[in-house]
Length: 463
Ligand code: B12
Ligand code: SF4
Image 1: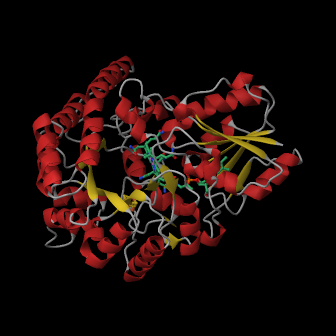
Image 2: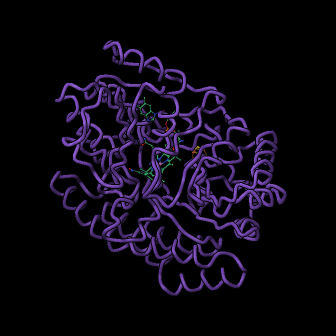
Image 3: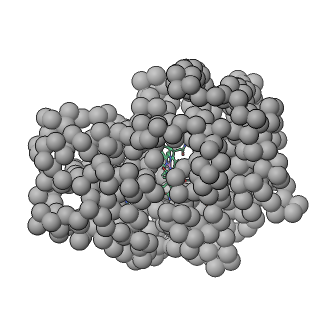
């Protein structure tokens, strides 16, 4: 039995534009969900994982599979349906799973033979069994998995072409920020994998550098943090010799022992959502940790960096409180906090989030011809009507923010300060140049988007 597991590409996402900017090579990540699915699949299936981010293959020239499984974030949904249609025309059954199919079940069900909602661990073997007997059902629900059931991902199936390996050690997040899909999809209960499984899986990863894809690496309670420390100790003892990056909330900075253990286990970078430079903005998105009274962001960032861990700060433009000038304000705040890289995204209503409900009920979703418009839901395009910023203005704020933070002068200062503190100036330089090199590409993409908005007759100014 032949199984294709496919990760569809979205040409609007910068990671696939390697030809235009070779720095993007470092930003192509492995589709871990499909590698986990492969880990759940029995030996009677011959599995091929196709990651279209590395190039779209000539499907017609490939041997006919018995089953196709497709994953998709919302921004990939469009292409997922194109691929599904190709195989369905050949009479090959197509199953779709992942976050988009879960959040937009009714839409997905129209486009494929079978939809698996939720996490696959508890249900995939049933789907395969039904596929073997030509009795696939239209819908399966995996719910939330037991973490003991998460298999070792099949890292052997995606060998070359990536700068980073990928692994997951926890799922879920109790914080439920308004714009984020994680609580809606993976649940509010923070679930941790058995430490022995994490160490064993790390040992099967070939790449020296790894993305630990957890949304909230250390969790929020004393118990979660104690477990994170235990995991870091086990990783260090296993002498994995890996360097890894992950995501956490700013409370990562609050425990020196935790930071020391993380660094010893190989942590070299952490992605932190600051979201807004103002307390009002933090209240709006519900980012509770960042509101801690007396929190000194600069000191927190510095504490992390002292352990040779780079900090990437993420902010959002387009909140209801954001007015003209927000771009420069974010660039200033990020420089003042001392982050090594800045990642700014447009406020985007993703299906299933609290933000989606608010914006949809207020008639504020501007790009709403679905499924075609999903390709713009990359967080790098404005897709909604913003309260105090027109389309032109919100784009201008983004460009101004990026130009300010990624000016050569500011890059030079950051790299110099990195060198001075004996951290990783080369990694900081590559990261900064990679972002900078996309500025020109982004401006072209914004121009195309403005034309698209205009053709749709969308009113540009909202307030
Ligand atoms: C790693 C990651 C990335 C990597 C991508 C790696 C990759 N190619 O998969 C990078 C950094 C490139 C990335 C980029 C983006 N990401 Co991202 N990313 C994640 C993150 C943190 C982890 C994903 C992961 O690997 N999970 C671990 C695996 C095991 O879980 P899984 O993929 O969900 O798979 C399980 C189930 O979904 C199911 N399943 C999945 N696929 C299939 C298929 C079949 C057939 C079946 C049966 C089951 C099934 O079974 C699996 C096992 O249980 C998630 C957050 C999250 N917790 O999901 C955000 C997340 C998926 N990303 C998100 C977003 C918005 C983006 C971007 C659009 C914007 C951005 N700038 O971040 C881009 C777009 C990328 C694109 N190509 O279009 C959103 C997506 C929301 C949505 N509705 O689409 C999430 C949920 C984060 C959030 N804050 O809301 N991302
Ligand atoms: S943004 Fe981060 S902290 Fe907020 S719900 Fe999502 S994963 Fe949790």
